Length: 270
Ligand code: ATP
Image (tube, rainbow, N blue to C red; front, side, top):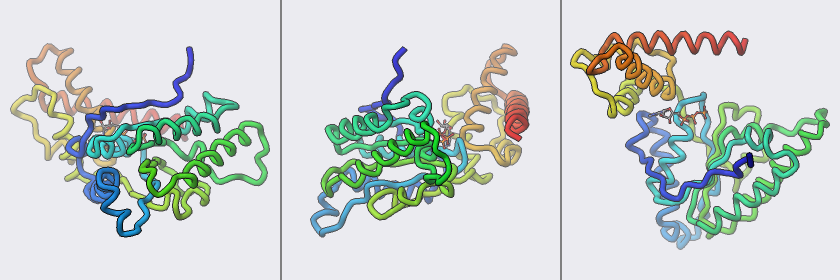
């Protein structure tokens, strides 16, 4: 089967309502929504609209969700690809894929390009590693830099990229006119976890005895993705047990199961 070049979504339904917590990050990306919607407001005064921003934070904290919400709020098309797919699937053609991606995004501008796991292509260029795949990665990275530098002030394509390892990125990526803004997306605190539960409980049939404050307290260290998992798992457990609504015990069982899964995952890594 042919590997997909990138995803293109011209009618993004995600909005800021789908993103719980992350108040600071939402405020920062609101500015980007404004740039996309009213570029003239900024350019008439001689300002340059930023070309890129880096979303930095642990896995599952909503970086992809937030990027999509920017596109949804601004009502612009969303082009996305993952850095790891790039390196794994497109051997020999990385640079031309980047060129195609930017070409499409420019044709559909205003638009958003989202690059998940940018560290896979944007790792600092090593002095010693001389393998072929590394050359490939560098060509891809160089093409990305070239494309961003080539944007005119009125291109109106904004590139968002996500990473959980900003420290290992090539500094060239962060230079002025490239990803010169960093937006931090952190793990949720107890209050934010409650808000995330509220979002993911919306589609569920809930029992009366659900206590969100309790659940939020029971889930320290959980990411938004983990909480989404808990809610879905709880619904499946309730269904398996023939219940009419998802209750407190289903949630506790789901939390246990997710914690078990997280522990297993950590064991494999270490
Ligand atoms: P990764 O670094 O692993 O790609 P990410 O930070 O991009 O992760 P997302 O893919 O955006 O995380 O999150 C996965 C899912 O978790 C989302 O689709 C959503 O269902 C849920 N989620 C994560 N964060 C939030 C949040 N702040 N509010 C609501 N849902 C969230």
